[in-house]
Length: 248
Image 1 (tube, one colour):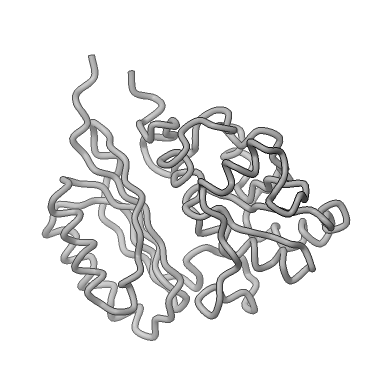
Image 2 (image 1 turned 90 degrees about the horizontal axis):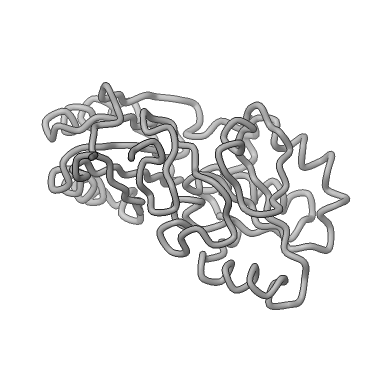
């Protein structure tokens, strides 16, 4: 019998302009270590992306302290639980992008593409079209090996090897997406932010799934989704209850 979940896991990201990412690196890591947290924080000029795990109270307090900086005030976290710590270290990394696309003109901090809530998307998928009667196409923006663990029913999967291939894939497939409502989705929302902007640049009516698959699981469970959701830590994947899929 597995132990009761005692470790809180959070994933969060925010596109926000940072001119001092290098200066933030040390203090953020020191505070995380002092709170007994492990995981990864990625900082770049375009924002922050984090995956952290630890005891609930100090982890939530860490996020609250982070939000005290006005630039991080809108940061929203998706929570899940595990019986063991899924990370081995506490890392804070500086990168050129918090999610690499190699498309400098795509700047979500300057204006994000429209987002569709899990509740609205559930209605669209239940009725088979959006509120304007247009066909809804789910577009998976993740890498092929992630999709193999689970995906939305009938979603497009372009068998990407890395996210930097996405813009070229959109250009190659834009004809089949015209006159449809395309909903881009990913694990927690960060890739969808950039993906939806690329789609709109190509003249496609695109939305991003607010909160990604993890947000969908929290709000709608298994509906219209088959399988689990791959995550980049020792849990490997989580199920629709946001529990580690490998735990009994």
